[in-house]
Image (cartoon, rainbow, N blue to C red):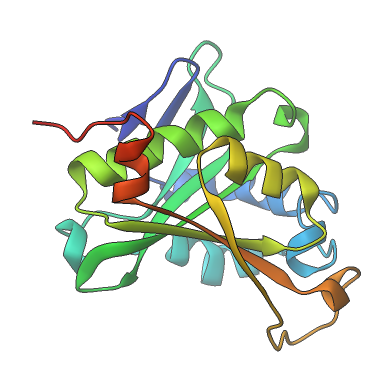
Length: 192
């Protein structure tokens, strides 16, 4: 399967059913899912029925392309997690949400920033994106740092009604954003 995006150290490709075990392992680590569901593991059945279909969902506005990709190290081929740049509207790529989830043993290597920056550049140069948004819990300092390193700016704090209260949710969630104009003003240039 052809890679969707290649960076200095990562290769991103569409997910397949062969990725189920890697996703179960990823979502089975309580530290990885701490700010998502309080650290509860995701069952194999839930990965098959919910997670994988979401990660392989095609978007009409992307010509039927997906908005999430499995990430592996280029040198070793090791699965390190996933990245997403999903349009918020099925029929327009103008606003897309950036997301990522990495294995704990891949934390601290700069992969989250590297993959996010590459997706941002591709979104603005090739996918028709005008604004990128990203959300995380207010207390998720690591993820907030990645968003800032990737070029996004804090927009607001908000309080959503989540089905289950998890540690830190009393502080709310934060939204970050980057517009095409801001991206260009920072020295990035659209593809000609």
